[in-house]
Image (cartoon, rainbow, N blue to C red):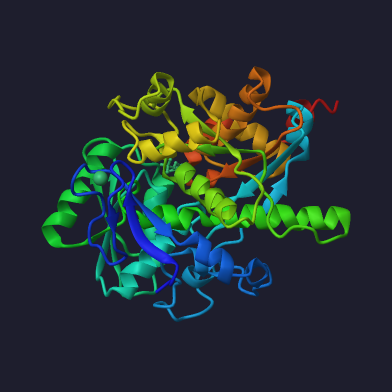
Length: 427
Ligand SMILES: Cc1ncc(COP(=O)(O)O)c(C=O)c1O
Ligand SMILES: [Zn+2]
């Protein structure tokens, strides 16, 4: 086990729990648990150059900062052992279009199941393998389930999945094809969360639910470590001198539903800062759907109490009635001096097309919300003219083809050269 990992702390009352604790949340107040490490000892003993020069490009290169190192899964060269190090692209055309100083895209559509959720599932699976679990269960809007099903394939673990009725077909297909047992719940995502939890209690299954199992946040923070390393490398290339090993952007823009991705990314940068490996923690901007307004309203009220408001957004990834990791998401935004920016469904569809046309990266509506938040942030002054910004892209457009067909121009049916000429105004 990681010698620096001290266990968990309740996000509400601060109670401490040892690493082997079986609770998912605080038994006293239901608060989400946060993994804690001894950063002082780690800073004394871990040389960041060991990480930066590590030949392993997977998330397991950050084992010193993870509760599990994946060694329970000893087979190399599989999706589970290799995932991570997704590309960080510079979005020149978005910069020109928006007037932003520097914009980067962290493209997690390129992970094994085509979404960011692989990071979380990998760490949860590492724990499940290390503790001899047989069944892992998750409620999901689609991507977390797809990630779990993909990464359980090839292990002895059985994945049991609960998804809401509005889950896009491609997400369902990508779950079922990997041999997971899938249940479509007659209700919303939050209903699926409740049913998954009840089944885990009843049958003793291991629960991977987002905003419930504290290990998901640990997997998600690895994207921040990669971003900081990649930014430092690009800087090094530009200046031809090696100055820093990790570098933080000024602003991170993240699509937010339950709030677990944003709280994981924030924790990642907080940890790098606590270790003295980055100079600052970025400001975190949460891009939410106007039609899933629970987090936005809580942020406006400045309250950690979240209303349950039925979501009607088409952006399945961020379609939640009430965020399961809302408290930690809100703190990420407030403590970092960031903001929550609401985005309309139509704006996300437009932005899907703009992002694909400008950058060659094809995302689902939830991630396209980050592009809209960038534009809105620049025009409101939230994002300044010298800010370096990273958009965290979390899921592939191929996972929601119906939205893509709505966002893209309709193909034309033709049968003659004359029709093509006329359509393209060539004659
Ligand atoms: C593509 C995509 N983006 C963003 C999110 C939001 O993550 P979170 O629910 O942790 O806020 C999800 C969650 O399912 C997702 O699938
Ligand atoms: Zn508590």
